[in-house]
View 1 (cartoon, helix red, strand yellow):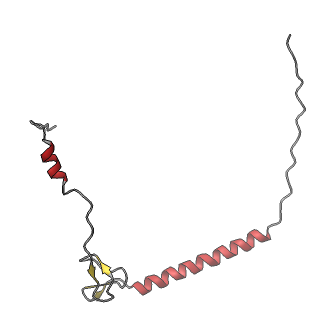
View 2: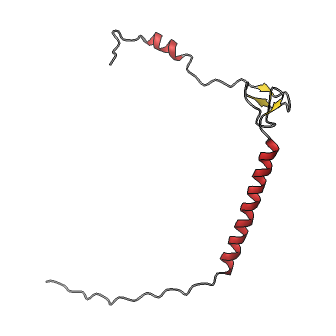
View 3: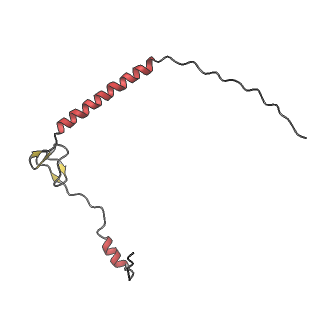
Length: 105
Protein backbone atom coordinates (compact mmCIF):
# COMPACT_ATOMS: atom_id res chain seq x y z
CA UNK A 1 0.00 0.00 0.00
CA UNK A 2 1.25 3.48 -0.85
CA UNK A 3 2.27 5.64 2.10
CA UNK A 4 3.11 9.35 1.73
CA UNK A 5 6.69 10.28 2.54
CA UNK A 6 5.83 13.66 4.04
CA UNK A 7 2.86 14.94 5.98
CA UNK A 8 0.53 17.16 3.92
CA UNK A 9 0.48 20.70 5.33
CA UNK A 10 -2.84 22.11 6.49
CA UNK A 11 -2.65 24.96 3.98
CA UNK A 12 -2.26 22.59 1.02
CA UNK A 13 -5.02 20.36 2.36
CA UNK A 14 -7.34 23.35 2.78
CA UNK A 15 -6.57 24.69 -0.70
CA UNK A 16 -7.49 21.31 -2.16
CA UNK A 17 -10.74 21.18 -0.18
CA UNK A 18 -11.72 24.76 -1.10
CA UNK A 19 -13.35 23.57 -4.34
CA UNK A 20 -15.17 20.63 -2.78
CA UNK A 21 -18.54 22.20 -2.08
CA UNK A 22 -22.15 22.03 -3.18
CA UNK A 23 -22.70 24.31 -6.15
CA UNK A 24 -25.99 25.65 -7.44
CA UNK A 25 -26.88 23.94 -10.74
CA UNK A 26 -26.83 26.08 -13.85
CA UNK A 27 -30.26 26.23 -15.42
CA UNK A 28 -31.35 27.27 -18.91
CA UNK A 29 -34.81 28.16 -20.22
CA UNK A 30 -36.59 25.51 -22.27
CA UNK A 31 -37.12 26.86 -25.80
CA UNK A 32 -40.54 25.21 -26.04
CA UNK A 33 -42.24 25.90 -22.68
CA UNK A 34 -39.88 28.38 -20.97
CA UNK A 35 -39.42 26.31 -17.79
CA UNK A 36 -35.92 26.14 -16.27
CA UNK A 37 -34.10 22.89 -17.09
CA UNK A 38 -30.61 21.49 -16.86
CA UNK A 39 -28.50 22.08 -19.97
CA UNK A 40 -28.24 19.20 -22.48
CA UNK A 41 -31.14 17.39 -20.76
CA UNK A 42 -34.68 16.74 -22.03
CA UNK A 43 -37.25 19.12 -20.47
CA UNK A 44 -39.38 17.31 -17.87
CA UNK A 45 -42.37 19.59 -18.44
CA UNK A 46 -42.82 19.32 -22.21
CA UNK A 47 -40.46 16.47 -23.23
CA UNK A 48 -38.61 18.49 -25.89
CA UNK A 49 -34.86 18.86 -26.47
CA UNK A 50 -33.35 20.90 -29.31
CA UNK A 51 -36.76 21.30 -30.94
CA UNK A 52 -37.53 17.56 -31.06
CA UNK A 53 -39.98 15.69 -28.85
CA UNK A 54 -38.22 12.84 -27.06
CA UNK A 55 -40.78 12.10 -24.33
CA UNK A 56 -44.52 12.10 -24.95
CA UNK A 57 -45.53 13.79 -21.71
CA UNK A 58 -49.27 13.72 -22.43
CA UNK A 59 -49.21 9.92 -22.88
CA UNK A 60 -47.42 9.56 -19.54
CA UNK A 61 -49.99 11.77 -17.81
CA UNK A 62 -52.89 9.81 -19.33
CA UNK A 63 -51.32 6.51 -18.28
CA UNK A 64 -50.85 7.80 -14.73
CA UNK A 65 -54.46 9.02 -14.47
CA UNK A 66 -55.76 5.65 -15.72
CA UNK A 67 -53.68 3.83 -13.10
CA UNK A 68 -54.93 6.17 -10.36
CA UNK A 69 -58.55 5.65 -11.46
CA UNK A 70 -58.11 1.87 -11.45
CA UNK A 71 -56.58 2.00 -7.96
CA UNK A 72 -59.48 4.12 -6.68
CA UNK A 73 -62.04 1.67 -8.10
CA UNK A 74 -60.18 -1.24 -6.47
CA UNK A 75 -60.15 0.54 -3.09
CA UNK A 76 -63.88 1.22 -3.29
CA UNK A 77 -64.58 -2.47 -4.01
CA UNK A 78 -62.48 -3.48 -0.99
CA UNK A 79 -64.39 -1.03 1.23
CA UNK A 80 -67.71 -2.53 0.13
CA UNK A 81 -66.49 -6.08 0.83
CA UNK A 82 -65.24 -5.09 4.29
CA UNK A 83 -68.54 -3.37 5.10
CA UNK A 84 -70.56 -6.47 4.10
CA UNK A 85 -68.59 -8.93 6.25
CA UNK A 86 -70.62 -10.18 9.24
CA UNK A 87 -69.11 -9.59 12.62
CA UNK A 88 -67.54 -12.62 14.25
CA UNK A 89 -68.63 -13.71 17.71
CA UNK A 90 -66.39 -12.67 20.54
CA UNK A 91 -64.11 -15.44 21.75
CA UNK A 92 -64.65 -16.65 25.27
CA UNK A 93 -61.65 -17.42 27.39
CA UNK A 94 -61.47 -20.12 30.00
CA UNK A 95 -60.82 -18.97 33.51
CA UNK A 96 -57.96 -20.75 35.15
CA UNK A 97 -58.41 -21.93 38.74
CA UNK A 98 -56.85 -19.62 41.28
CA UNK A 99 -53.49 -20.69 42.70
CA UNK A 100 -53.43 -21.69 46.32
CA UNK A 101 -51.00 -19.78 48.41
CA UNK A 102 -48.62 -21.84 50.50
CA UNK A 103 -46.58 -20.13 53.08
CA UNK A 104 -43.36 -21.54 54.46
CA UNK A 105 -42.62 -20.67 58.04
